[in-house]
Image (cartoon, rainbow over all chains, first blue to last red; front, side, top):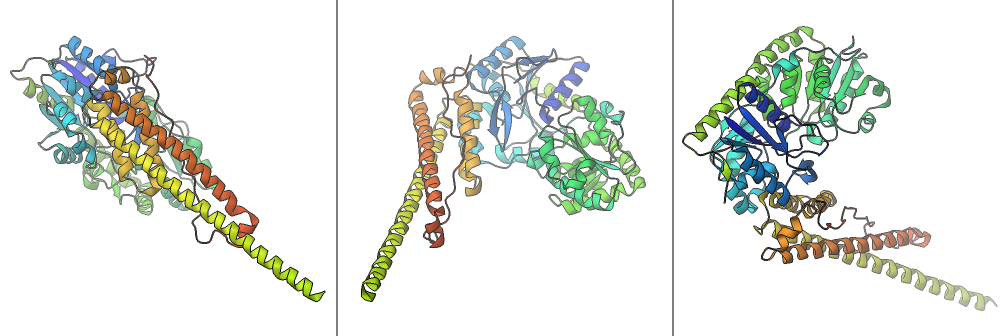
Length: 375
Length: 179
């Protein structure tokens, strides 16, 4: 099958959607299909050979944070050319309600289109307000996939209709084994966090408060944080005596990320919302690290309602400290959670997921011409 | 002699009283003008967000650009006073990103109604820029006047709330981007 995939966010910025697309593309190629991904990208950036850059990603405020997107007349004409040259059997757009390439691709394409919705967005007036132009683009979609129940619900609320639920994939094998960073986790135990430090919905501030509580009773406990952001500014949010017990690594590459996961005794996902699946949480599970996560819908699901990881009351640092503390003090419970997490995360492996996505493709292409450019 | 002193003292007190009340009314006028400037700034921002919304819903733009603008406008309208500056700055940045797209202006200028929509957004953005400058200028002068020793000792500002600067990114949308 010839598959064209459109990615909304800059390839240069690590993120759940980009990683989903990369892993899906590679799993599909592994299954013997031809895949081309169009994405916003920066000119000097090395790209895998299945990726077509659609020009520079522009940083622009959207949905409460700054995203690097591609829009405007030039991007639209590049998408048109990519569709013409690609001659795809199916077009697969991701996050078509984000103002970027996938929405443009829907707008200009004709033929079988599959859309994947990642984020559970709050109902906003925008979708109603710009309905005519959005609707003409979105109504061309033949089959919709939601990566989580939360994402499916919002999609149904915003746009009506229904969607197939296919959870995110995790390249589980990539996470299973890695060498911990030098000196970690150490005899006093360590707790970890991965994600953008400044983005408030990622919840790092909650973890810092909880760490203060935990550290008071556990003199050897350390904190390991990795992700894009101003490390020095975050470090200063901790009281002076605790600063030497915390390490802020800044942005890490894939390989280091796996090592970070293996460097802690407990991994924490304190996200306060806006998360549809929590890929990082699933990766921690694939690494076999016991997870403490906020009890938002997405995490409840991945963690099987607390059977494959500890949940705490969303937004409550004291409850986070209580849940993490219980794990830190109980190695037997941690070992139990490792086993449960590995079993739970196997259902999300990319090989399993890619086959499910393929059967969606096969359903929409039945009896249809290939993807072209609408007149 | 005694009488002369007494008259002089009373006269000095009366003049002093006049002076204080004159200073108080000046400060009061300053506060009134500050309030008027704030209203002008609010109106300019409303005009700008309406112009951006008109453009977004005109049907002349591609859906991505359209959605981006509409989202920024929605935030401006939804946030409370505390986050107003952030939301308005975001709208500025969205406008700048959209207007900076290669070919954006060229394409719209050839469309029916396009030049008018662009013109209105630009005029409104210019107005926000000017209104904010004037407001902050008055705020600075009011702060200075309130901090003078006499104004502080006699509480000439009364119960008027202390002025605050309105900080936001209001740099105007550029011309055609590179490319």
